[in-house]
Picture 1 (tube, rainbow, N blue to C red):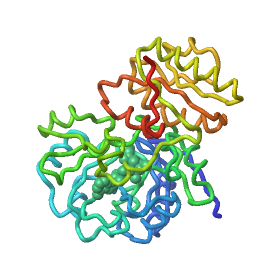
Picture 2 (picture 1 turned 180 degrees about the horizontal axis):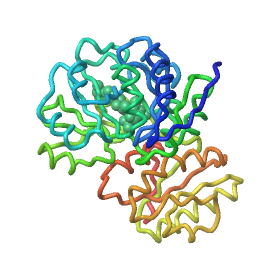
Picture 3 (picture 1 turned 60 degrees about the vertical axis):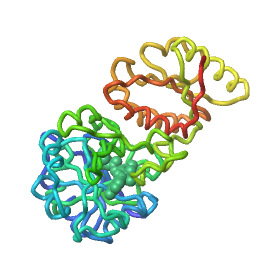
Picture 4 (picture 1 turned 180 degrees about the vertical axis):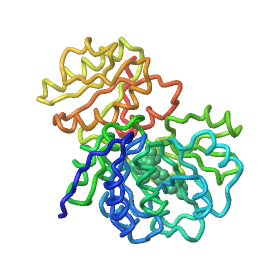
Length: 351
Ligand code: TXA
Ligand code: MG
């Protein structure tokens, strides 16, 4: 066990001393958790094999699941890829720094430990000043998965990182709550038609507007049943709370009635039930521990609150979680994909 120091840092007034220390840890092969605009990341020097290996150990992450390399300026991309296609230049122009990760052919300098042995590399430039300053100070290439224990919901607060990784890493930079709350969109540019491997805040429509035709990996929607997703990380049960979670689908009144029925039956059996409702529906639930995820009209709010709520249910010790489903036309599958995985694809129809 080591001592985990949590240091507050203000993105709009960064203490250079703190960044210098954090950068020093990264350069010497150590781990630092830091805020990004999507979720907290667990950083290590991406070009040191042993440093990347340390990440897998701290997270308990399967070693075939590759990491994203975070950079702080577009120029730095050249060193870690063999080729920069026009589409990458355009997407970087439009969305970097921001919640978009691109898959590109990797150069020799990137160790196998970082890419899980793949011949491609995932790269992103995060839109968070603390993150960018840390990357610069840490040598320019920071491999960072979400800073949670493998399989748990991604951290959207420094407290979540501490919960999972205390005693395992030396430093957490606490920049407060993240903005977006779900991980970056991943687009694979090594395919003939660019392919979305993980949906996120940047939607298929937004990408298409910049580079033309874009497809979504069919393995994402299939739920890993008959079609394997191309991003190795998308095949794991993920983002999951401890309790067994069910999504209840159908017209709103039917969903509320169904959740009330299910909850009544479970409470009778002595179970503790959590319910994910909305501003519009929460008051109609008769029993159970009801958490409002936000307004049905505000998909950004739903994305922002989702992981925190899953962790809150864990803390409250519920045995079962019933959740409404949400229409999220702007973000497309980004939210439903996380919710389906958190629920292990358990869906109940309320007809
Ligand atoms: O928003 C984010 O992307 C956050 C923050 C910290 O930047 N990071 C993040 O990393 O979500 P992680 O490790 O939790 O997810 C990385 C995903 C995994 O599903 C992994 O399989 C996929 O990216 N991935 C990485 N390299 C890949 C590659 N070369 N080919 C296909 N998928 C890749
Ligand atoms: Mg993750």
